[in-house]
Length: 500
Ligand code: NAD
Image 1 (tube, rainbow, N blue to C red):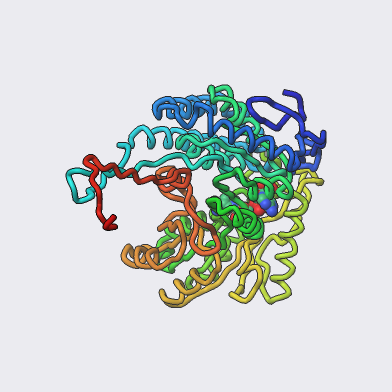
Image 2: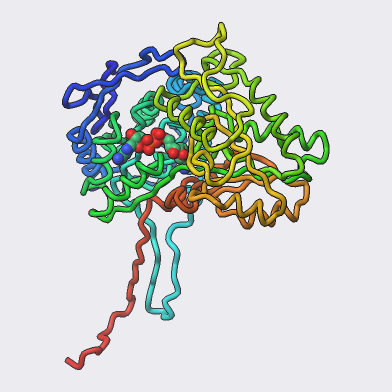
């Protein structure tokens, strides 16, 4: 495969029909990391045509489930074989640490194995009692068809795999588009699908921009489902583009996630240390470029000063640098555009009355850190309130805002006061209170005395403007299927509705 042949259609690697290319940057120093093909709508049309043929007349949708599951397991094994190489690619492309890249490969491996097990353990169709011994009524599930899969830049391999694994397990064919900012690990994933023996035309890949490539994938009349992970603005456009052809749409969008800390969680030194440590992790892992980042700290007034002072002290000590360098805890932001967006949020917050406890922009120069990288110092903004843009909108950067409450009801109201509803956490040593509050939070994932873990067996997705549908878990597989009711009359007779 040459450098620019990153489009995969009908089993062949190729360059863009137009010959166009795009440079992919290393965010740690802004140098060119790789060159990829820049697709346009004609490449999408070719990829959709291949996926359509493979679905309508190819073997994959009719392949026995045991063989489909075996292929997913081979992909999982190949991911582990290439673990270091993929982790390095992901680290250099996104800026995340090498260790975070390894965690992603392991998580993705688990997702492929989970969906293989899930389809193998199914009992087939569901027999429905039609109230007559002369009727056999069964509901079966069939693949939905050709899927457009569109993913963002923060967890490229992971987001692609959460779509690819269930789509394949269910017997679909697809066209996949990674973010133009971070396409490299997805190219590797498609190489592994080919190596694992997936028939030509089942997995097609286009590399290129949201518009026109993602837009064409969303509107294409021969596509049956579009599954999109990304920002609210693009997700809205995907929905609109998909509407005229009434295709199924699944959206995993952003979040503005509350991390609610009750004073009782901080009553002991150990409890305080844990809650601060996890609030730091919630907000700043991968420099805050996480859809479920705990970007809103909602802390009980009585412990606020102690909590925020310690949090800011630790945030200032986070070691920023190139993700591949040993000892580095946080990499750069993914792009200059993301850096400028983050800085603009800090400026607007300060103009609206927030107080800066640490960070706010470029970190101090350091010998180990390239001066040209998109590094942004972890930032804590105190004295925040609901009317501020920085509290309402997803910054997707290393910014933690601090709000306070006095009562449980107030904590719940603040935590739910967002148009999003992806994830949130509650910290309390009172088990009853923690469970009560978790039950009242309008978010798709709620952690109690923890932050960030997820399981392939458990659904992931959001309430409100955080999206439509779920990934992972049984629902994550159901997204890629149509239910069909087959009603068989074993003893057909005239119904005589009409006298004749
Ligand atoms: P983005 O919306 O800019 O891009 C996401 C993908 O959509 C990219 O592949 C992009 O090329 C494509 N795209 C852009 N415009 C399009 C259009 N008009 N039609 C079709 N496709 C289009 O998002 P991003 O900046 O890459 O990623 C960050 C966002 O992703 C954040 O909002 C984050 O919260 C969200 N995200 C959500 C989850 C989740 O599970 N809910 C996970 C990761 C990221």
